[in-house]
Amino acid sequence: MKRKDYISWDEYFTGIAMLSGMRSKDPNTQVGACIVGRDNRILSVGYNGFPNGCSDELFPWAREGGELDTKYAFVAHSELNAILNYRGGNLEGAKIYVTLFPCNECAKAIIQAGIKEVIYDSDKYAGTPSNVAAKKMFEAAGVKCVQYQRTGRTISFEV
Image 1 (spheres, rainbow, N blue to C red):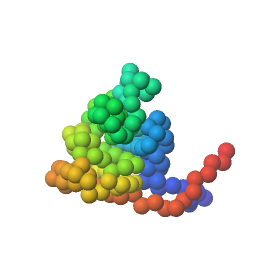
Image 2: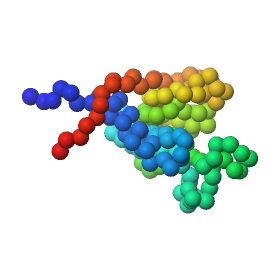
Image 3: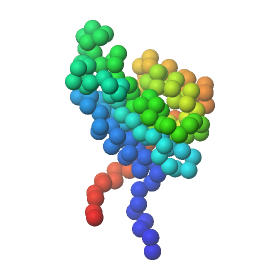
Image 4: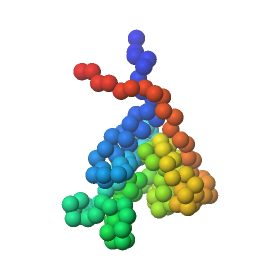
């Protein structure tokens, strides 16, 4: 008889997104993303960080200061990294699992990539202009947005 307490697809892919976010070197915000095809196969993952070749020792991680003295002009968000990391063709009809609801810039990339569903954990910036713009674009483009419902399950590993 098979196990009955295995994790759901949403738990699995949200967990992968959370684990991916743990790769971020950002001292304040770690965000992860996992793109999944229609057949529940992982197509790509990403996390927020600097582009390849841009040293995380030389670029700023600050949140406040002049525009070029903060991370905002340089960091690529997890969703964009996941989209750009995909090397298999188009993402039409895919889902993206993200730990934080996408900003308006990532919403544009998600829509243009053909991703049709966003499953997000936190909506920390709900009501901000970037958040409102993202939701407006998702609705107009027919991208379904669903907040992940945590199960309260604790994860333990046994070998």
